[in-house]
Every structure is written in structure tokens, then in C-alpha cells.
Image (tube, rainbow over all chains, first blue to last red; front, side, top):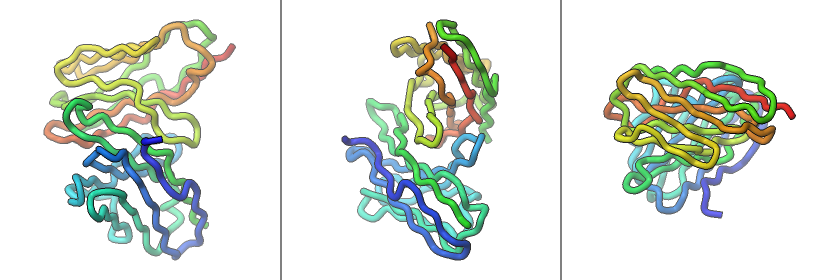
Length: 115
Length: 112
């Protein structure tokens, strides 16, 4: 399967702990996005990479959040000192320009629960 | 800043009905518009992407139209089936951006 994959699928942690999520995009896609989604809402943009460069970050992305995409392949999203308000589904998507016109393809998401 | 609104928020219909889901956006200088399906607790599945130069796209029983001048897109589902039950989201970027803003979705239930 060459779709977008995310790990872990579920994460339960205690408040104050650090967590890290991983996203593996579709191999030929050079763009990678992180979103957060809470119940009843559409996904909210967090950050975006083109190859290894982080080009844009949302104001939603507090300094407790950091994302990397070393070598322009997989990406990690780390949340430090988690808070109960961080509980959400974290979604990753990838895309490329060209024939697919930046069509975004999403992974299955990582469900974070902060106790 | 792009704002995307979807109407209705929820819809419950009997199997076999033809449906229209609406999406409106405030910034018409969009690069494209994408419709997604989301099943409970799952990621998003891309259904259709309409480029800014196109007026509509079709895939099977789905047809999406785009009217940039009025800031509207519609998703038409023909002959609905219980398996179509899901939340349908539309997403459009702001002018000059590739990053989409999502609506809150339309929650669809098709009952047998």
C-alpha cells in the first residue's frame, strides 16, 4: 500500500508528558501537512513542509509543538508538556503539484487522549 | 482569510434519494477545491478535486460543481446508498495559498 501512514494510531498519555507522532507520506509527494481535528469540526491547519523545509506554521501551533521532516521524507510532530486541550485527532496529508494539482491525501490519523 | 461554510450540517434521507450538499467560500481566488469523505474515527478520503479552471468533476455517482464567482460548490450524490453514510467535507485554499481551509462538514445518514 502506497498511501499515507501514521503511527501510532492511538496514544493515551498523562498531562505533562511529551508525545511524538510519525507520518510517512506518499513517496513521490514533496508536500506534507499536519492538521488537528476535534469532534464536530473540520481539520485545522498546523504546519506545512515542502521537501525538508517547514514553510508555514499556524498560530495554533504553540511553542510546545514542533515538527520536523528530515531529508524530506517522513515527518514527526512532537508535543511537549501535553495539556488536556491537546486531546484531538492529528492528521497528516501529502500532495504534489503537477498532474495531481496539489490534491491532498490523508493518513488514518493519530488519536491523542491526554488524561 | 478563507472561510468555508457547509450547509446543511446534518442530513438524514431514505435510500435511493438524490442529494445536494452545499459549500460556500469567501475568497474566490482559489487554486482548487476538494471534497472529502470521513467515516467516524477515520482519516479523510479524497472524493473529487476541481481545479480553478474547471466547472465540474464527476466520479461514479458523485458530481461536484464549482462557481468561483459566487463562491459556491455543490456535491451531488445520485441514488444514495446506506454505504454513503459519512461526513462530507469541502476544503478550499485562500488566494495564493496551497493550504486548504476546511468546512465543518455535512453529516449524512442514508437509512435503508
